[in-house]
Length: 177
Image 1 (spheres, rainbow, N blue to C red):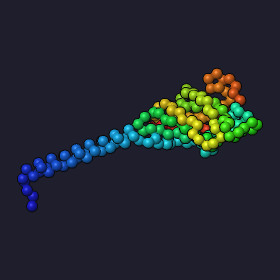
Image 2: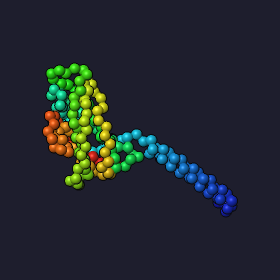
Image 3: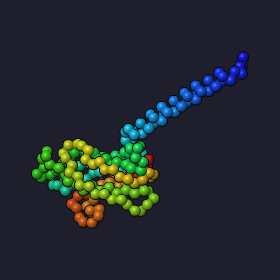
Image 4: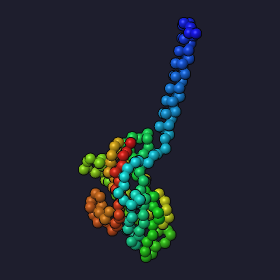
């Protein structure tokens, strides 16, 4: 049987509205806290190198090694990404020992995939003989598709001066949130 009692309908409406408001407030609070403390996430993309790796010959006694590349992004910082390099450990020839390091000038170039203007960074890295993270560099290409090239070049990226080093670089097309 249907009742036309307006009092019960008003109470039910107030309870439903209150429950919806509490639910919305809880969702907003959890969502805001989740965004502020979100862990970095991998940036999706396609790399054209084998295993996203940079194989190099460095500046000390023809030292050699491999740096595996990864790019991640913090959801709280749209338009920025962090380029991370993990060394598998360096080795060398000549007077090489466990305390030796392999010095390389590591180049990062990036742009949005539709632009010819490039942002260039060159970072001096001393790679140890043991596996470790050797590179963590934040870049700000903006949101969208970017082209990222990493590697060790025999030319300085700013002066084009000769540097006695070389690598097989890694290039990727990535979607930065």
